[in-house]
Image 1 (tube, one colour):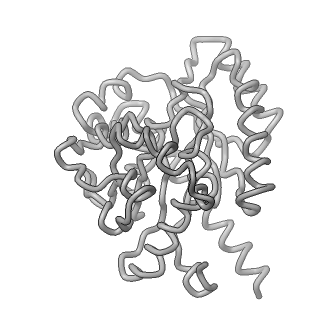
Image 2 (spheres, helix red, strand yellow; image 1 turned 90 degrees about the horizontal axis):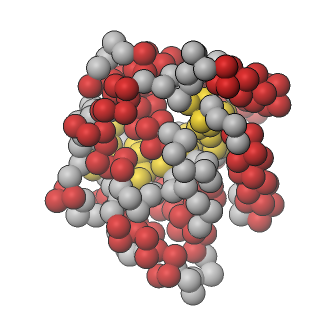
Image 3 (cartoon, helix red, strand yellow; image 1 turned 90 degrees about the vertical axis):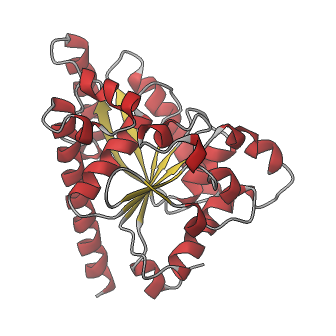
Length: 279
């Protein structure tokens, strides 16, 4: 475990998670990470989805994924050796590939399997103090398996992308039950970083209704920024770039910059409160 001096200089670890697929987890991890890097924050994304979409979306080809998240969880590789630069200055990634789908089987007999990622991050923070990182974003798969459990066990908080669709609240309720179970058994300090509404269509009454319902239920845990449904956001991964590099002036890019600023303000407020409690 980290001591207080080490922990105070540790990055904020945020799991980007939702058990539902197609809600914008990877898109949010890539573009939030890019937007944070653009405002001078140093960020590492951990691609914890065997599909490896975050790696592809940040321009890391399979040939450059010599050390992956699989090696981090199952092998003896360190986080330091797995970190790979991306096309974005200040943003690195621990890439993934299809081998990661075998992690559950490989770790089946390991009694500490849920703590593999947590231990790797703690070791990195303790041993690589000069290589300051402000944020670690973990892109989770769309299921509750050993990978997601590792992410939630390692994380300080969970950021939930929520698509503006009819069953959104139902899926969010299921996820929050999972968070409570992880708090009870694996990570008592896991917090809700926030809920970000994605694929918002201002021309659609349903989007407005979902937004109103989510804000009524979760209050200030819902970010003010909403991510619009935007074709440029959808096109960007096909050229291996985040949308901020693909089209800085589109509505999607502006939304992710706004979200990053909210996250940074939120973190500064949290640190101020924490310092006040210590004093």
